[in-house]
Length: 401
Image (cartoon, rainbow, N blue to C red; front, top):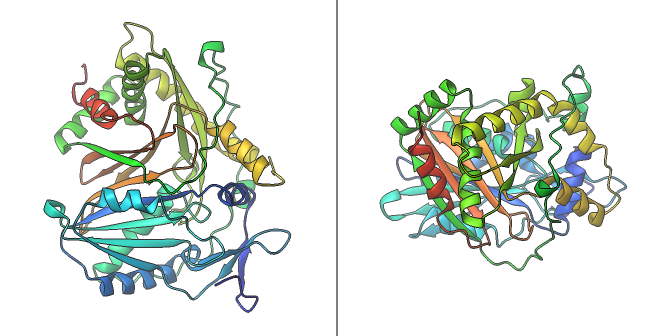
């Protein structure tokens, strides 16, 4: 597109989108969802479906014009590209997606990889999104709609979603400031940037079968926890065993759609919090899970104000955006839980993700999706933490009553 002035402006980037875009101007941030299909699709079928998907969700058909005082989303007629891979595994394709930055000046800011003949996993589609246009939950909405289109449904065009701040300003103010001031031992090390060098990250997976996932839900409820609280607790125990650390910091994005009852659009609708879990000798998974659940509940109650506070930082350049993002995300692990993906009449056998790197040194990002009753974990990292998803899954499988 190269932001032709002949193309209409869709809307300016909101304050949070602008922070993300400034950061991305020096540090690529894109993420992928992998959808394993029950039956093969051709590249032509996928291209046609993606074209319809772009008509449904406006931010899938834009580029970013950075030539003015404020960057804008500008309309484009270019189609989402499809790369074909024969053989191999969707994890290899998803890792390669992290080696190819999305061109923000170009359009669109999404792409797809079709993985055929992937051994016993059959056909998979890896959908990749630049972070200016959507978050993980919005990407899951796009994946669901793509599956509906592939199944023959016709979806209506949606209006351009408002930027996050304009939407939140219309909502009543509520909640209390988050105050989980950790002691000195829990303070994070200063995060630093890992300069982008196109090195593919390691991607590892683990999953719980439907019976184990159902048991996790029921047991968490009986112990005054949520599933997310239990995942945080299991991750804290696994990381403590791995590193010997007694205070574990977990960065958790907070989906504003569920927290505030917002519409499920393909757009950014999130803020984040840091769960701090002391892991003393003899601590139980459920004591940690209850602590994590309480912290996450407080963060959800304060989500609107937290999102507006983050947007108010107004960095002047990429360096200031880097500093803001590093301060907000310094942690031992990020857990991005997209929640439950109801299969309905979906042709998806499994959905995995998000897989993502943000160019922060030693980061570990754990994507979580529950689809068709099975909870699935996927870890993306440049570090050496082999076996962490399996360790977390094992702890969730061997839950104490």
